[in-house]
Amino acid sequence: MSELITGEAVALELSPAKLPSRVLAVLLDLAVAITAYVIVTIALMVSTAEMDGAVHVALSISAFVLVLVGGPIAVESLSHGRSLGKLACGLRVVRDDGGPIRFRHALVRGSVGVIEILMTFGVIACIASLVSARGRRLGDVFAGTLVVRERVPAGRTGFVPPPPPWLAGKFSGLDLSGVPDGLWLAIRQYLTRMHQLDPQVGWAMATRLSSDLAARTGAPVPQGVPPVAYLAAVVHERQARETRRSLNSQAARDSGGVSAAAAPVRTAWENPGWAPAPHAGAPSPVPPHAPAGVQAPVPVTPPEREPESPSAEPSGRAATGFAPPA
Image 1 (cartoon, rainbow, N blue to C red):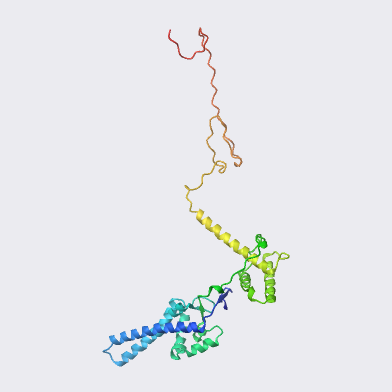
Image 2 (cartoon, rainbow, N blue to C red):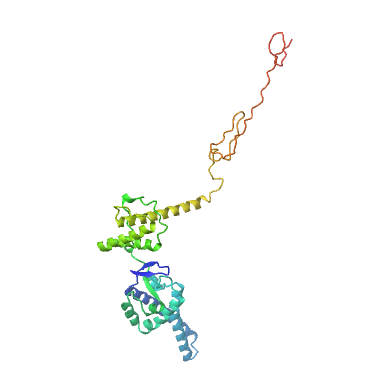
């Protein structure tokens, strides 16, 4: 692994390409380029058969420059460092800071590659790659680039161990806003590699990282908690918070598209601005959480009917408005 420092002071772990894989990628690229050069040369010779030899020489040199030199430069520039051979071998050309290359990087690599690959049959490129600590040839040195492996085996990926069960949720109230990204990266790298370190060196690093983390959070490390377990628990808490934040934001976006027709119906007790129509003679209830100043409507009582006076009939019965036949 090779650690690169980006412009934002972030450490990147990149695996430089080995010499055999680079040689295989160059051979594939050369096979494609030479095939294209032969086809273009034959086409030019056939189309200019009636011209003299000087024209043929000029066309051959032009085809050599355009196909064998300009072709790889254009391909690497347009594909950001992934030619056909590098794509087949899982390689990629990047800058020293880990970013994608541009046209000037591809131009320098291609121009120097004419001398160290084409004119010397790759001898200078192989020697330079063997001498370099990161396997760079002269074109990479002058251009400020590096060939790295994109397909890394799954076993190489780091795994952050979970915290002990008795520390689950213990740091839920910890303030993690003051912890910089560089410290998080250092803690994560230590947790993924702590089994590869010497026990004494690993314990010293865990103690130092836990002290830095406690200073950033403003809370000391609890008594009786090992530094390694403390680091794993805090990292787990940070991951849990990020997961909850992303889920809440996703739920908020989903709920924003719900139509008004699909909204649940609220009752009178859930909406203080609405109350059902009162029945005749019954007071209208006012929700217990109604705002101040809202008074209950005055119940409307129907007027009382006056009793009808009995009619003076011989039978002494009250008048009903109906006269029986005589």
